[in-house]
Image (tube, rainbow, N blue to C red):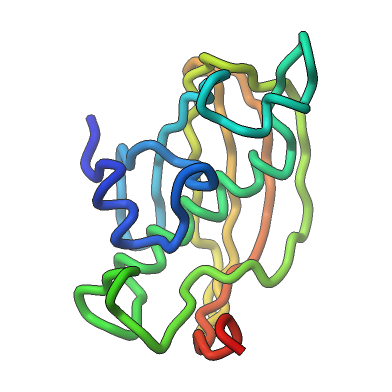
Length: 160
């Protein structure tokens, strides 16, 4: 069941098409989030060159699906500003990728696969958050597992 749609996701994240890597949020708590993405051959730019006649979602995009999902969780529950809106709230960059501990790619994701992205917050120290992630396709096939860290920083670094 969808609890946050694409328009609401865009209030929480600075990402926009063609780089917005999640379609909707299915479940959300202070420590877990489940999101969904169905890669589209015509709409997702990375398929044009990865790979012609055998399109697969690049590993970097799978990583980005988990980090954007974690970014939604962070913005919803840990934002320094109440009612954060990516278009109007200034002062913070939430969900900045700080470290990738590991990523394991166990299967391919292709156009039309229903991808469920599951992310858990496993540690937090001030504005540094550590997550684990898993992407399942079509409900049961593990595509990727990872562990990574995101931070909340001043947005002055984005504009200088």
